[in-house]
Length: 255
Image (cartoon, rainbow, N blue to C red; front, side, top):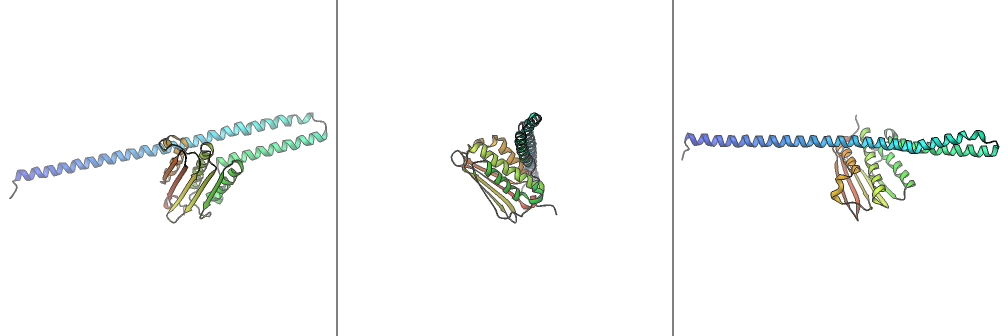
């Protein structure tokens, strides 16, 4: 049975219209995806800038509240030295001022180290992370355990700084909010990927509230900036854990 010419034309028209509609639909979906990705990238950039501004504000506040006050106190005490006539008292006062200067210098070193861990460029992020962990152990009642299968492995300098900031943010969040007694950090360097796992035994939080924390947004923004994969698992009684994965091709040092 043969179709007449009119039916053939109708079938061709229907097929053409179907393909046209499908093409329009696919183009529309692609446009929507592009717009959604653009908005997401804009949000990540915005979060990154907000992170930088918060870090600047914190450093400025630390310098003003801590270093500024200590310098003012030292200046006042030095001004009183001229009124001390007894040599033993004068020597004791000078020793006291030297200790005040030493404390101020150590405080300034801590602030500048947090501002920019300069030793990353020389020694790499693994060494600086060990230093961070050791410093936190001295000042906080928390057990920090870190394992690293290749401490000599190096990546792009900008990535290493961001990775340091990510782990620093995780530790700060744990100390401030989790009331944890233990933190475990594992760094695995592979041929194809770098994988970071982080877990604390603190109080945790409800999963539906994850997106509202600025610290968590900062971690996600820094991870996504290098096309990394980011996941978090937390509950009130079971603590919080993070998993980060970066493709080596995206973070390898320039040759």
